[in-house]
Amino acid sequence: MHTIKLMSSECYRKYLGSISSPVVFCHNDMQEGNILLFCDNMTDEEALMDPRLVLIDFEYCSYNYRGFDLANHFLEWTYDYTNGTHPYFTVTKNSYPTHEQQVGMVRE
Image (cartoon, rainbow, N blue to C red):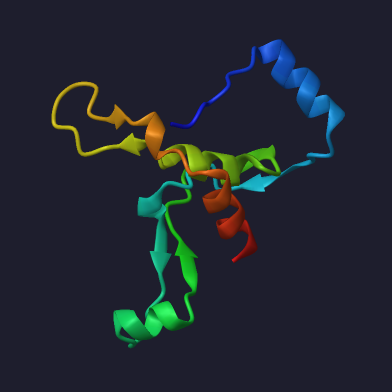
């Protein structure tokens, strides 16, 4: 089981002030449905040999801290939006990526 530590807003502001995290232009909605595999007349297998990703759905784009999109993407791993009843999503904290998965994605 993974542990997700929550910080108070004051701790968060203090932490952000202590690191080099400039405000940059961000996508702000890096969930899996907004990241597509570019195939361009290739089979899925061919596309996976040399994957190129395409981002879509830019209505939330704005300025944010440099690491926000990556952090948001990892958090989105815990959400399932296929729930048919209110609130129409479920959260599975165990789906949060492990340290190894996070590092693997950043390095690839």
